[in-house]
Image (cartoon, rainbow, N blue to C red; front, side, top):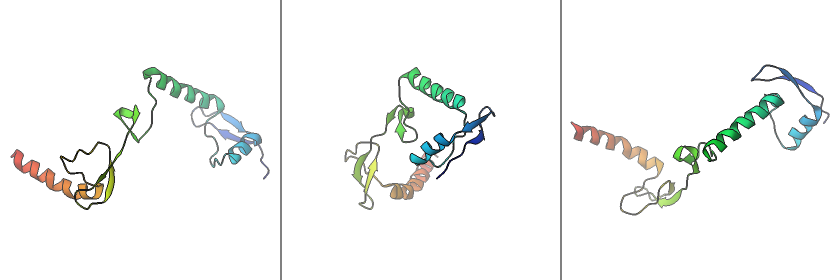
Length: 122
């Protein structure tokens, strides 16, 4: 496949930059489907600001699948649902003192528990 240089507009600063044929070939070899939306200067500035945020508080961010504000990965523990018996994973260590529910059974039980709390609060 032949690649040709393309002119793209940076979504951050609005300048026009060249997406070279060599860069396009590299993207294709790596399986990257989207072309860059930021110029090289904005890309490096964005990487620099992201790395300075990590160095600022000493924690690595793990995204949506993390606990404690993204500072550590959430550890999941296997458990059997007390309602249907299906195996599930929960973000706490099941101790056996209290029932553990899968998400489906929990969502069925949760509305009744909220009504009970409202009735006892009156």
